[in-house]
Length: 338
Image 1 (cartoon, rainbow, N blue to C red):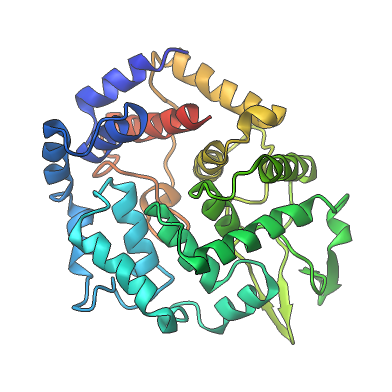
Image 2 (image 1 turned 90 degrees about the vertical axis):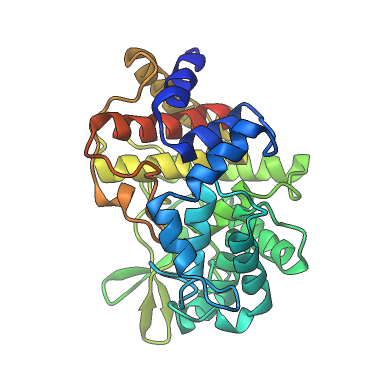
């Protein structure tokens, strides 16, 4: 479909964050342009942006937790999603604090973060790297270490013919076998927002791994056993890479938008037929809606911002047009990065 119709409608009637991000990410307008400066000023008046800015402590940390609802992780994610300029002092100080205080990574996640890191399954250190990657930072050595962990997680998928190959039963629940590796949502996010790893060999491996994830879908929730404790890794959005789009409810649509945007940024969609067909179906839906995503979707996953959920950039969805703005924008991102 011709995305110009969708772009034109959003530039005319959407909120400032959507207008800014379309101009920046899709149209390539420089942040120094007068209209971009004006939109940036409007974004700073956004109610949620002002709330997050109010979380900032004197040392730059946002909130108190590292992981959770009112946390540095969620705060940075909101500011980046809302289109805050990466040079904004609040965001810059938050990112500097994240680099300066690695001793705070247990806040809101506790020992679980260390356990998952030790297992290579995406714990506190990978979350930290992914948060910095949202802000287009990837040159720090500790981020490169976590990128290698993420690549190893995807590479492990290639050795799995059946989920039974990597799980065992513990008290009636499937748990990862000792030393098993598997990608979490943070593996996917980190690779989606970084570029230094993208050699031909790595791109081919990641594409093949995603293709295998499609073949293995739907993937059950698999736990991590630590002594007698069961821990849930960050499998949000990572359990069904080949859903029936006609049967998805609103919650699954939110997960689909989030996962598919990351996969599009990853650069694998065109090489995985099942993903390409899903994006084709999305384009058909926009074409049928005259450039708008008109499917009526409402779920707290869209409007509740946290470590995993939250995609709504408009103030609220009480007006159907605002819901369509948000979902049309997400659709455009997927089409653009695909």
